[in-house]
Length: 434
Image (cartoon, rainbow, N blue to C red; front, side, top):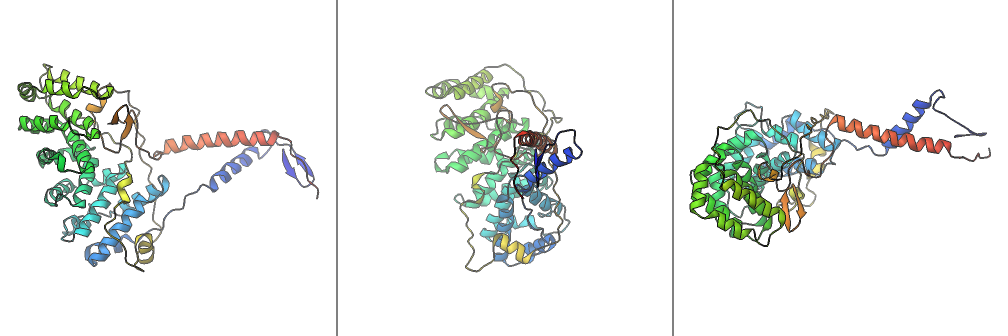
């Protein structure tokens, strides 16, 4: 029933205009939920100032670009920001110029390096961002070189490590890191785990595990098996229980190499594992059991297949993205969105590109977390500690990224709106006086 000036009248699904009326109500229900799009930027001017501007401007601009991405609302707004960066090749990965924005990672200015690293980490936190970064062949080496040359207590070093760990979810990036001997560097760093802060320790072990998933990575560990096994078994006794699943995963995978298994037997690794399995949560004990089974197996290492399907993971934006800022704007100094919209406003060119739909995958085996790439932001609290989850079990908080999913959600909302409207139409509505 609907109000009219003279009383009320009924409306039914058979009336003319019924469908358009219902759909109009549906659109109205969404009008209040619309998310504003951020203004477009003049990316040519942005890139020019990142290359030729003063160091202070470069730092503030890198920070502002990162904030625009990390502080945007998950969903269409963030999609639009990221796609604008990619469409305009913000990092100039397709540029033939000798000096590009990406080379700010090698700047002599520590603040510039730090803010460039944080921007790269923001890109690496998003699935489409990782796909974009994977088109830059020199990036893994550039980041690895930075990791090796920065001071141990440098905040830039920690951010670079986080970015590398997220990039290690992709096969091509794993290959580049292994070829650059990153595994040896990680093992040497983890040898002195008591001097590492929690973030560095967690991301280092997670990165090492991801690299050990590859046959090339396993063989790299086999070159110095005794040293690697000693470091990994020592880490199982570390008080930070968040690293245990990553250490378990690395151990499980390198024991696929016969020579590593032989070395482990000579070092009595099974006895060490049995000691560490006491007084720990059931999930950890199951992982230890799988490692022992792997240690005592007689399988022969086969060749690695290069035909594996590249799998992508959902967005991994962590709460660390905008904390502990080393760059603070001066009073009355333009920064963040104010800097971008005052100095770099462009023509409206932003176009949202929907991400591809993920292919449904079968349920995993119980040793799933030992054999798949992980990232520390994919954790949940289980009996006795945090353990990484496979993409089948859980995903980091993220938006619905595919058009198909959006359409399904929209259809469900439409059904809900239709049901509510029908209920409203059938309720008695009192007429009112003129």
